[in-house]
Image (cartoon, rainbow, N blue to C red; front, side, top):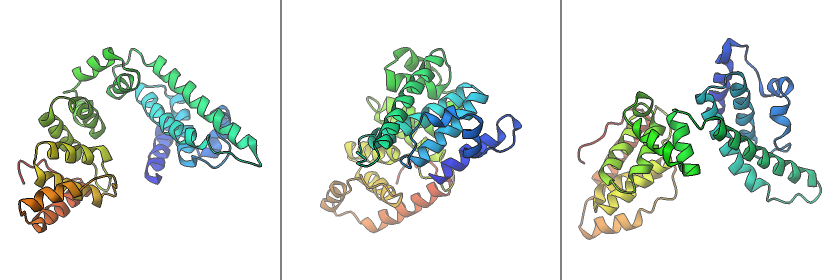
Length: 266
């Protein structure tokens, strides 16, 4: 996404108070960060973000920069893995460079995991647990639940919700609401926030809430939300959907404006 690339560029500009560096300049300055990734136009955005973040992590190897690089490599890996399956009849070297990019991403993610085994960074701890089933990392992550780095981060609140959703519906809903409260203006929340809320409310037979967040999800451009079952439940009890549609629109606008407040009841 363009916004994400701008953020990466902004960090690159500020890191070490250096002069701004373009992607081309980074590749000229540190060609190794570019040459072991794919050479064609596939995964262009992910490749660019990864290269820029590689340079940032190289200049300032903090846990936060390692965490951001790990996320970029994971995103790049997911894209290039699909691209590597595409046969290019005339230019076989294009597929070869995609495979090389995939192998580089795996190698670099492994390096980052090894480098951060003793970390106390909440994001890295979550990744160590969710990707590598590191129970020690999970214990450390949960111990940081009330840490400011977790309570003020929409991403970390969602990570906590992904853990509690297995056995504590009400706490998960509170965490998902907190995620929406922390969502910044003009940003679209993680799709999992809406799909999880709809699923939990439907499970609790709270069909009004499930309907509202189904509609909010649709307004946010999320397509994999099944609203039909919720509508059927509401129709059978002859609920007026007009008022719920208005509430959904209001909720959507609050989230988009960064002004959502957890509701006590609808």
